[in-house]
Amino acid sequence: MSLSQVQTLATQTLFAVENGKNLSDELAHIIVQNPELSPQDKGMLQDIAYGCQRFSGSLKYMLGKLLNKPIDNKVLEHYLLVALYQLNYTRNAPHAVVNEAVSNIAKIGRGQYRSFANAILRRFLREQDGLNKACQFNDVAKYNLPIWLIQLLKNQYPKHWHNMVTAFQSRPPLTLRVNRRHANSEQYFKLLQELNIQAKVLDEYAIRITEPIPVNQLPKFTEGVVSVQDFGAQQAAYLLNPQAGERVLDACAAPGGKTGHILELADCDVVALDIDNKRLARVQENLSRLNFQATLHCAPAENVHEWWDGQPFDAILADVPCTASGTMKRNPDIKWLRRPTDALKTAKQQEAMLDELWGTLKVGGRMLLATCSIFAEENSLQCQKFNKRHNDAILQEEKMLLPNEKQDGFYYALFVKQAAK
Image 1: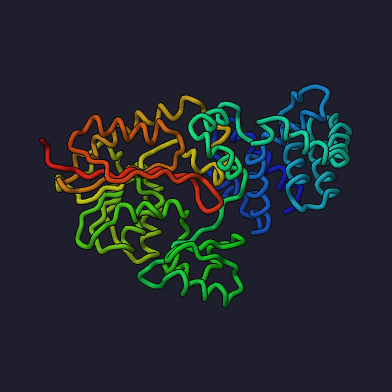
Image 2: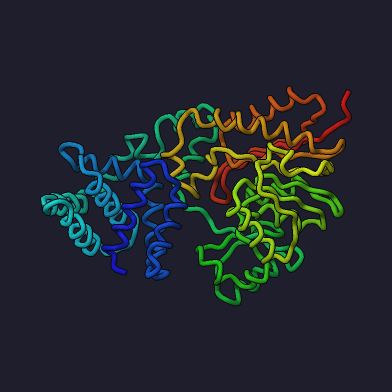
């Protein structure tokens, strides 16, 4: 497939996100619809699609500086944004990027935009340094976040917001969780060295790959020796601390990373829930690769009558639905899809789920509230409200993991259930 076709497919992802669709889902759909894509094509397409969202603020700002008036043709605008991303953030040959983009744009309408596009892109190459410097004087362009989100971060994290917005503009690391039933980090690190795969040990069972590679190139991946899981996400199972023989519920389990980790830590009886059958199938795939078994149910976690047998749980991982705002490094489209009121909406959904799940926990048992959000409404405020509603809930531990070079953003609150007074 040519660079020209990859650019065209990349513009489709811009349309999709602008229309409220999830970037990851759209890319998966495009790849299925275009089976002729080579691994190199897929890599380039993914880089452009994610890059255009990651740097959308600066790309649109620089394009605006090159225009006398706004563009009223979305197809033209998207081709120009794709080309600007390639010219500014990749090592693609500038002449090839410009030539292919202009050729694609020439097919719009009667070709009336060809000369215009050529002039815009060549002018960008001449003024590139100055345009990038100009981005430093516009907050949306500098931080690549909408204004409301920048202000929210400043308000909620006055000491950390700058590091957070910097993290959100970086590419996510490929982090592995080593299956302790097979090896530890040092042992797996030696396997990577033998294959000249550069990596860094993060802790006894976590490793970060320096340059991300396809999972099928990871030694012993198919045998279940390692799994791909963000370092922050790996902390959930440790905080829940499952013990041998316990009955454990993993609510909202898909895609199964935390489910597998729980079973790596202890021989326990796990019930895994998810609302979507396709996502639940991914849980089963992950468990099969790790050679573990769990009881899987497709049902809303809050509808306990649909799946619960009445036997109380020793531990519950309540990985509740959230805005996923802590994963904007990994899912940059979230920056532009979320709205200021979204956290309040999901917090309401969380309340109902947490209350119902609490009723399935035995006295002396523990429940871990987990989100990949950085919004207080879904995290610390949710924790406070839950404590007020349940006088038999004791908050044992609370953690906010901020997004950085090592991890996405996560929040955890561990509650222990005491006998009712």
